[in-house]
Image (tube, rainbow, N blue to C red; front, side, top):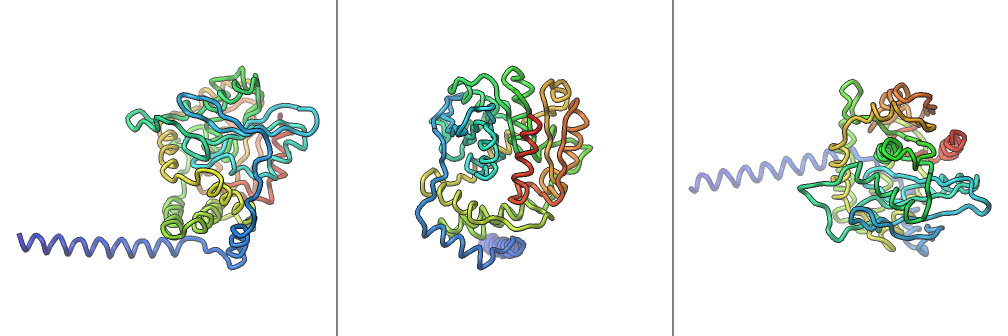
Length: 342
């Protein structure tokens, strides 16, 4: 028994040593935050909490979830309604205000909302581990919002997982869909004929949480948002507008429910449970616009190109120097291109 005890103790020490070494190694691979950006984050935290909610807010009931939404109207007459569907583990505030303003300045009413488990969207029953929700379930959330607001049809603009959800809406609810825009997304994330996610992305994302999130407090959680955005850029270059990212993160931490990192796993499970949408996409009879970045490390651009080949009469925009994000330098270009395809 003494020998066994010593062996277990030795194995424990080895495991801790290897874990520490792995943590140090992966943390060194995380992009660093410049002194200038650190100062920007500091100033944001020392300033009054920014006013990031511009429209009327409310809740829609969807499958036991209270789904928070914001309804932003243009100053003049409404040309149509655009529903923005964000990616995994992200809430409504992840949509840049400059992107939204391009639509409202053009006369479009914007609906953005918090995904399940993010922002202010929650469920008293919580997530059923034995019967997890699917992307098809999540597609019912924006439909519930439209029902609550008395809106019959809308343009759906989805990014990443949000693009998958928007595709399901267009397939399952064509009577509610004016158009579909799928940004940096895929019709089948597990398509064996297409390249997979860069294997270095997830370890870097986790390492960023380890490096800044464990003992970093609110400032660390803000740093995570900046670093994650940098990681998702992949090989694309360009500066990140740190101030709006920091303001959204700070607002989330002070005025909302902060960040629930386990939600990302729930959303990933919903993606894993989804099947190919190619057959349904091939039958679409609404305008479709596909936007994808050449340097996307999460969902390679080959996924977007295959969707464009599958969907009849789909228009596309392939952007150089864009990874798996909405680059600040391309926000206006992307938004105006989407509007032209409505």
